[in-house]
Image (tube, rainbow, N blue to C red; front, side, top):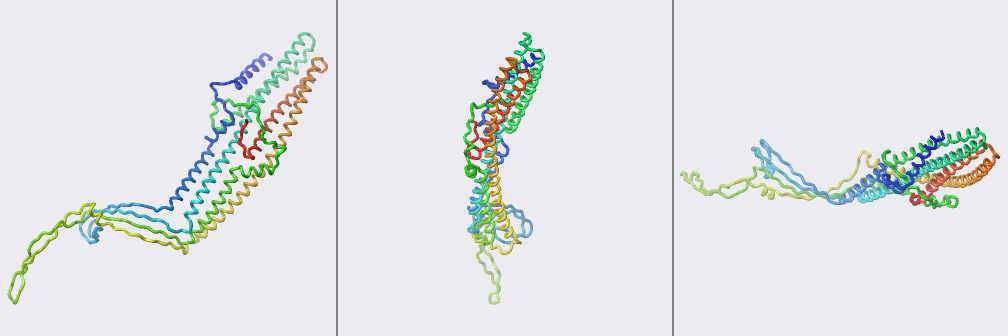
Length: 478
């Protein structure tokens, strides 16, 4: 059984060596790379960036609403029977083909500030969308850092379990040698064999923990589980903010100014206030000016080419006697009028000023004003809720960091004490002063102390980074 255990231990050690050695086929990821990858691929952030683009389009649309509009139109018609020829406004009975073209333009001169306030509101909405995306990016960075540290924590636990199993095996071989020499009784191997079995189980458990932690990180980064990742392990992580020194007021004041979500909520209030002004503008008249330019064509359109000169004779009675009077005549010669000529000859244009005065609109204007006011009140309450939530989170983060710092210090003292106790137990066991049960129990206490120290270390590291997060510092393990 011990040989099998040694073979498994050797295989696992090779795995750990591969993790820590330079790798060509596998890519090394540090925390910054993981955070950047998450920000580029996270769906919520991508949707937030689309919201920024939508706000930009709305802002551009609002700006262009100041400018005059210009629209063109054309129509084609085929008429039968008695109808009016649009080119000469006369009744005709022949079927004819007609074509009309027109240009129209309109510009608003006054609408009680609706356009100006809409432009301002769209600018505020665009800025709010930017801050919302920044808040999402900071939140994602914190989630990634937590998952990243969980992987390092699981790997360190596995490394510790393998090291402990190596010591267990070494101790087993030493005792076995003493038994073979007749110095120790054979039953002392039983406790050590049980300890080796527990160590093997611990290694398997920690291997599973590493796999699950790595899978959680890959899911957060939207990376396929089959892709191999090697996480960079920092030599020593600096804790910038001392949770035992900094005060709540310092963190909260910094968080109010550094957390983009608070600024986004405040901008939403400003946007809602502008929405009230926009809704109120519907109470006032609006003034606009417009103009049209149009022309027509008809295939019945004719133009004068000249006159056919002739004479016309009429019989008349002059003094009771019949007579013939001849008079000259000029008969007009009409030909088809070309398309371009008709468009030029039939041009008409005009300008007009229009005033729209709201009198009664079925309560629509008043309802819009009331909804806008309620929207402002709702966004104001949302700012207070965000600040209260932030205050609670800061209080919790500071309390957690202080508790984790004390727990970490206590865990180090406990580990040092258990290490000294184990060294003493080893000496006593070598001298035969204690039995194998007491020795194995001392080793188990040291193992528990080592595990508790690892847990306390990573717990304190992450909670200290949470405090840095609320202080506005970037998430980093350097």
